[in-house]
Every structure is written in C-alpha cells, then in structure tokens.
Image (cartoon, rainbow, N blue to C red; front, side, top):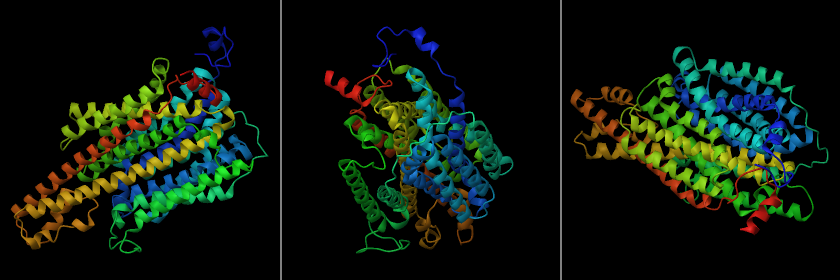
Length: 551
C-alpha cells in the first residue's frame, strides 16, 4: 500500500526496490528476546525455583511484578534518555546491565537476591524498550515497517514458546539456573552485533521532566503494589498480614486509589507543561485522540488477559498437578505458538479489515477459546478441545498485540517513535503485572473458597478440617495435603476423601478463573469498538484527522 506522502504513481516495483535489509530487525529482535525470555523463564521454572530457594509458589509472580513495575515506572524516562544520549548507545548500555542482572539471577540463593536481579533487569529494560520502536521507524517504512512491528510485537510469544521448551528441559534435567546463564551469553552476542546498527543522532535539546518522572513512577508503583497484595492484605477488609489498616480497611485498595490520583496529577502536570511550552515526560500527542486512548486501553486488557492465561496454565500444571517444567512447556506450546504465528501473519489482514473490526473479532475469539477450555478442561491438558481452545485464545491475542501496536505507531509522526515505544512499554508491563496479580488473586481466592466449602460440607471430623491450611492457601497439591493429614489421626479413607475434595476444588477454581478472564475479554469489546476505521499504514496524526473527517 502507499502512504499519503507517496507519489500518485508509485508502483509495487518501486516499493520492492526500496526494501531495506532485515539485519537491523534481526539485532532488535535478539535484544527483545533477551529481555522477554527473562520473564518467560519465571513461570516455567515455578516449581524448581520455589524448591531451590525455599520460597512459596507465588514468589515467581512477585519477582515478575517487580520487573514489570520498574519497567512501567521508568520506561518513559528511558525514552527521554534515548533521545538525549542516542538510542543505539542506550540500547547497548541496557543490554550490558540486563546481562549482568541475569548473571545475578543465575547465582541467586534466596528470594531477596532474585527480586534484586529482577529490579535491575526492569530498570535496564525500561531504557532499552523504547529504542526498539525508534530503530524500526528509522530503518523501515510502509509494509516493511508494519511487518517489522508485527515481528516485534510477536517476539514475547516467540520467547515464551522457545523458553518453555528450552527452560523446561533445563529445569527438569539440569537446573533452572542454566536458562539465565544462556541469557548472559545472549547479552554478549547482542552487544557485539549492536555495533552494526547505524547510530541515531542525539537530541541535546531534550529536557527531562523530573516531576513527571516522580509522579508517573509513584502512580504506577502504588497501583501495581496494591493489586499484587489484594489477596494477602484483603480486597476490602484488612487481613492479619496487612502492614496497616485505616478504619479496618485493607491498604491494598487504598494504594490503588492513591495511584489513580497520582496518575491524574501526572496528566494535569503534563498538560500544564505543554501550555507553558515545556516538554512533558511523554508527548501528549500519542494519546490525544479517542482512537489512541482506546488502543491503549485495549492493549492493557489484551496484555493482562495473556499474562493471566500464561500464569494459570503453568501454575496448575506444575504446582497442582505436580508435573515437570518440561511437561508444562509442552502443555502451553499451542497457546504461545498461536500468539507468535498470528502476531506475524495478521499484517496480511490490514488491507482487508480496519482495526475496529479486527479488534472486536479478536476479543470475541479469546472469549470463545477460554469458554472452550473452561468447559472441557479436566485433570490433563492434552485433549483436542483444550488444545483447540488454547489455539483460539493465542490467535486472538497475537492479532491484538500486533494490531494495537501498529495503530499506535501509525497514529503518531516518526519523531514520536520513542514516546510510542515508551507508551507501549508502560502498557505492556502494567498489563503484565495486573494480569499476574489478577490470576493469583482470583485463582488463589477461588481455590481457598472452594476448599473451605468442600470440607465444610463433608463428613470429615472438625479436628481433621482444622489441620487443612485454608487460611494459608497458596496452592495445595494432593501430595502436600496427604502429607499434612498423615500427621493427624485421619484414617486412610478420610485422607482419600480430603484429597478428592482438594482435586475437585482446584478444578472448579481453574474453570471459574478462566471464565472470569473470558468475561473480561468480552468487556474489552467496548474500547475495541472505538479503534480507528482506517486500514493501518504509515500515517501521520494529520492524516488520521483527515480520514475521520472524510468519514
């Protein structure tokens, strides 16, 4: 397709003649893989990490939250540093620091070291993520740019698919630490290859809005920290584990509300700087139109749904069903492969359907897939219908991630590519953290509720029920429950009944969690209905206004 700036007589042959080399994209993809594989190793190595570090099963989710929090909090600052110092130089620095954090992760001996490594990795990724979009915008145009953005959007899924196989094998046969050791090697490779990228000129006139940095970082941190502790501290009434309470209210919703207030303060401050002809932390043009705001909301929902599904599957397969990481990798492969393939191939649909149609169809597809999985899932993941459901969910999510990314890039001029990359980084990592928090809160809460209900209605003696750790439920496997009850006066028949109740409760919790996630996907149809009606391309903001005016 041609852009509005293209000559009226531009031909396909002219476009092909101007095709750029894919070498820069290869280097960018490797850098993206380095950062994406890190967060993919955590869920697939859930069991081994928990056992090796003597930590609860949700410790990996906490580490993932910390990583996502620091990326989301400082990615807008990272975009400004890229403009100020040069994107290639910032990318190289982020690759080095991220590689060092992976070395720390590989040698960690406790949860504190693991969390510290993920914090450092998050800061490094915050600087590197915005450079990906800038480098693509500088090297590719037209359909090549759309394809490159599709590949970039699909890389997390590719990383997940590859990681689940390699990391699953390493965690099962050797140790989960080898996966992070390989990331150190990859960091060295990316650093060497990065010198082949053409340097992008610095912009010394760029001013950093430090007040905006503080407001945005604090807002993101409070919101994500609040969501992550909803289960532990209580969604409304404060639990005993809560560090404090205000009129017996849990601090978790208080932190979320405080974060929302600070977020509004950040936008008010940014608008004030624009009126005073000062540079805001993030160019407001990238979220100025209704379509752009809807694309960001849809991206947040899509990312949260993906992380929730990607967290629920390993959690149940590995912790509840007591399977190996390698088995987990095989179980989730159809889902991750569908995301990666659809993310790249969806570019071919751009000439046939507008973003609005593709967005709505994708969210419906995700809901249908989750519905299929919820009603057909049993004690294994190998049934044809379950695999079909996961394929539908993956296809819908892969299409959304590429589509929404292209909408944001197409809606802004090239000079704002770094801001678009920062906005995507915020949306992706906030959604990752929200998805992990949603999955853990909903799944653990439902499991605890169903277990308590099942044991209450049973004929097991009250002293035996008191030995079941309902209030401390992280996830109770059949083996753990049998061992716990084996230390009581329970008879073998009573232990068998308790194990059966546990199996039924976890299956109900899984199905209910998937249905809730599917319902959220259907609600996302509303922001998807506000996506643009134009066919994505390399359009400027002015072109989009003209397109809407013609409609």
